[in-house]
Image (cartoon, rainbow, N blue to C red; front, side):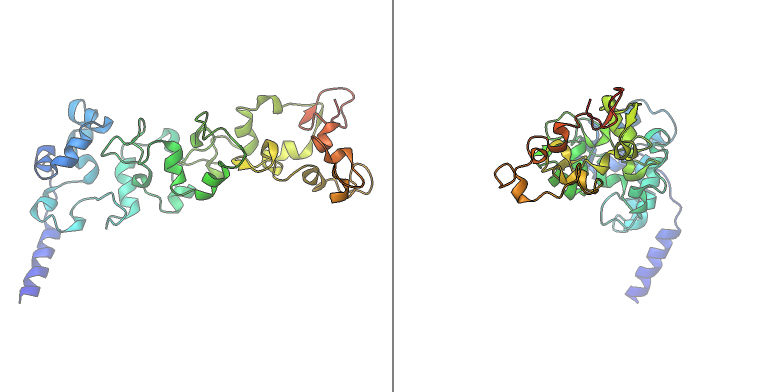
Length: 295
């Protein structure tokens, strides 16, 4: 009989109309959370200068009407919860955020890599406290937040040749838009090259003599996050060059350990900058005699 009564009460609760109860009622029980939240940008806007009816609801702007939660806090479905073990689906959680945060950088959120993999806004952001200086991130900064999932990229940035991310000169969002993009890898530009050219403008061209792999994609030769070879190269020269230049004879003799500087038949193309000892303008040349990228 007790079991039947419990089911009946639960059904009655779910059938109950959801009503807004106000932030003051929420703070009565959730005092600690309210104190942390009161210092955030959301709280300052919602409580002091709401721009619309949604923001004026305070806590219930994001968590939804609280009347059912007040009636029985043990029913997890009574409000929207932004936790990893929430009964609220990722779609429901994200929709609460997207009712305000639309357009701009989030124009391509739908069907993006993160959205398709059920990444919740709350996986990267914590609107309840100021853990970061900007953007209410769940970690201290953008990079630490991204590295929570992207472990491989964290290790790449620790290689001897790497982009100056660990030094604080750039962040992940200088190249990627985590909220969605029309390009692969959530790049902020349409292509890999256009993204790289934002900083490396001298490689953009146009050149009188163009190097085909350069115009195709920078990642044909470079690992953008970090490499154990100089200049972020995928592999050491001349082996990198010989992946394309495979004809017999110069420029493309097969090199072995004997051709190293300490070998029996040292070759200049294995010393210093290898092929670029001669072909110094490898990204392209505007010199009339630069067909071989030597000047």
